[in-house]
Length: 240
Ligand code: FE
Image 1 (cartoon, rainbow, N blue to C red):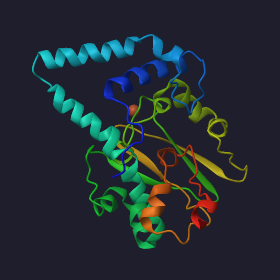
Image 2 (image 1 turned 90 degrees about the horizontal axis):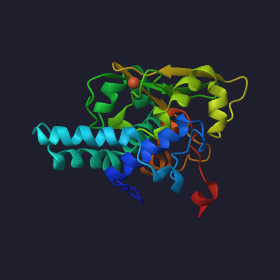
Image 3 (image 1 turned 135 degrees about the vertical axis):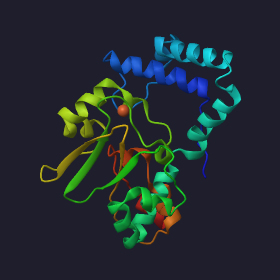
Image 4 (image 1 turned 60 degrees about the vertical axis):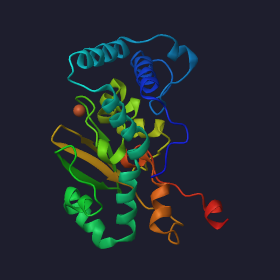
C-alpha cells in the first residue's frame, strides 16, 4: 500500500482537526474542502483537543486502553488504509463489469472478494455516478463514514456547514469543491447512519481505457468516493 508522502502524527492530526473544525464552525476561512492548517488556526488548542487528550489519559490510567495499541490502530488508518481500499474496489468495478454488477447489488459481499471484510459491522452501499446521476454522501447527524474503505474522514466531512448544506444546497456545496453539475444531471444526497454507510463509485475518466487496474486505482481519490470530486486523468501524463 502506498504511504502518505507527508504523514501527520496522531497528535498533530488531532490538533489540526480540532482547530480546523473550530475555524470552519466559526464561519472563517478555509472553505469546505480545505482542512485549515494556517499558523493562526494551529496556535490555540481547542476544547475538543483537550477533551480528547483528557479522555485518552483517563482510559490509559484505568488500564482500559493501551496507548501503544491505540497509536498503532490510528496509524493504520492514517498511513496504511487511507482511501486505497476503496480505490481498489472502484478500479476493479471499472475493469470488470460483472464485479461492478455484484458491487452495486451487494457491496459488502463484493468487497469481501477483495479481502475487505465487514470491519464496522454495518451494511455498505455502493452508489454509481453516471452521466445523469451524481451521488453525494453526508452524515447529517454526526460523522458516520466508511473508515475501512476510505481511512480517516476529512475534517470538513464532520463540520456542521457541510452536514447541513450538503442537504440544503448540494449543487452549491459541490461547486465550492470545484464540481460543477449540469442542470440536467440529478444530484442524489445520501445520509449515512450507524447502520448503513455509503460510498460512491465515480465515473471512469475518459482516456483511461489503456490503463490497468493498478494504474486506475491510483487515480481514485478519497473525495471522489464521497462524491465531492470527479476522478480526473492527466492525458499528457498517460502519454509520457
Ligand atoms: Fe454519523
